[in-house]
Image (tube, rainbow, N blue to C red; front, side, top):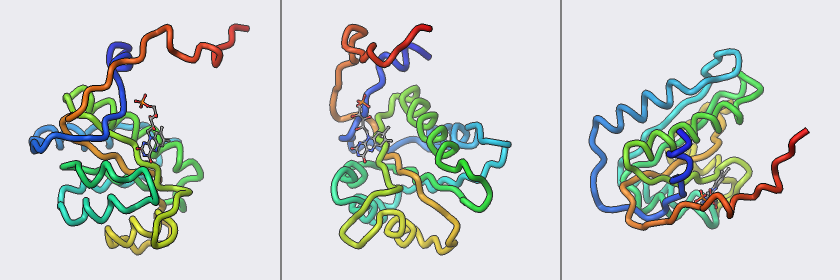
Length: 170
Ligand SMILES: Cc1cc2nc3c(=O)[nH]c(=O)nc-3n(C[C@H](O)[C@H](O)[C@H](O)COP(=O)(O)O)c2cc1C
């Protein structure tokens, strides 16, 4: 795990290479294995490969959502807020586990924040729900993850460059 973390970087540009179905099944398993408070499992995951939907999702934010437009896959992560008061935590855990699983399958990925963000049509959550045809009022959208085989190389951050000021020994 620490080797995976040492090499982890956000990847925003992707090769035009399809992701094998077997890998997509692995990602789906990773999503469903992510832990949730009180084991409520109130999250939901939309695996989007349709190019028109990916194009529409690339306009989910005023800036920062463009990587989806160049990705063969996006995973939209949301949850029913009426089923748990910690849906943000549950979705965030699933998101990072998906990103690390993707990396272990040689995929690059980018977290794209949706909750609390805006786009040309208004708030990003409403826009993403409209694109996906989600009508349930209690369904919230936390983020989407764009994924694909990397078309850019980003060097690992060296240990010396880590923000050790954030650590405290007591
Ligand atoms: C909660 C969260 C929201 C993020 N939102 C976006 C986003 O909307 N668009 C984007 O391009 N990157 C986004 N990122 C990626 C960060 O910009 C990136 O993780 C950070 O710059 C550090 O770079 P690294 O992941 O390569 O270490 C987000 C990351 C996190 C954890």
